[in-house]
Image (tube, rainbow over all chains, first blue to last red; front, side):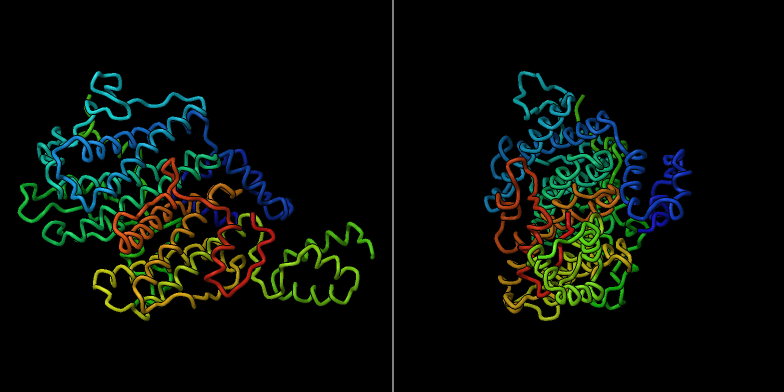
Length: 310
Length: 229
């Protein structure tokens, strides 16, 4: 292990790494000369946990943000599966969407339990105690048509009456949910919650692939960008040919910005050798698809704001 | 039987950590020492000189993940080389794309390890896969993907240096996408059944040693995982 390389790599994504390690600078200088090689891993680990170790409140805040997203998703699928006009979701696809709804409900309960166990107060959506609420179902808290969207008002006019529109919304929510939780993972580093949230992310990845596959199989008229089960570059879902929302990409693009990144821990995946590829290197599209990219809480909160009612 | 001094035991433990060529010499040496040879074989009945040593601690965990990604990349390379009968253009595109993504993952983890720490390349064994048959390819692809996801999840909490799991968490949700794709292509709506997602909605997690034992069905190589956390 070369510590200087690790620090240099972290420095590329976190320029403040040396500041965070300040005070331990002397320790750093001593590496390679005075510290026994056998003691290195432990010393390095302790240095990083001091620099990046999160307080319990930061862990809980991040879990509460994840909980907020799970409430939104559960309510979206619950509405689609149970409340709206029959026939939105074709019978052939219904088992999948019922499974997704059950998973999102399980995620809500899992996060409430975890946050409570850590001594935190679980997030509650607006209107939690309204007479129309039956938590986790809180219909007064959400407007999935996004009526307050300023480019198209509403953005998803027929989200619960038109299957292609519903699928576009579902794909956008799933893909960006992964990105938003991804962006919180560093808050859980070194805590048991980290592995569990990674498990949760893998489940969400399954959901996203299912929805993308349905759209792909509907064909290029309904899903003009013909999605793969994974995110290719930063391409958002396109509305069907002839749709009134002709430039929905403009509204949905921010959900996908940054997804075309191919650099991981300072290593550009598209420069790595791939004997199967015609160029001899990992193709750029595959390099971008091979990793889901994070979104910050600030960025994602702005993106989902049109779907949340005061 | 000769009782080993503690210094000799320490020496044996040190030798245990050294990769192949030196270890092989040690085995020859140990074999020549009647008592010590007996004691050694009693302690390490499954380790053979030809086993690939994974290292210890974080390096062992990274090498374990490297084994998994090599296994996947090799599987898809074979699947693309001899496409199954009746493959559609969409399925062909997906198979090539997944191969390139897995090669990207493999080379990435190899880069994280560096040449000094990366264990020897594995030799895979897919003799039980019929690459000409769609069902066989998709079934085995989903088995592989599910195993790899469980392995990444099981390893995530075991690292001493928490920057390592942060460096590969972004590929785990993509492996989830791969698995869901192959599962759904086999049987629609079966992308996340109760065999891979638990009652909390969390994707399966298994310890590295359990995953490695299960992965052995696809591998000719054998491993010395004695220092795998």
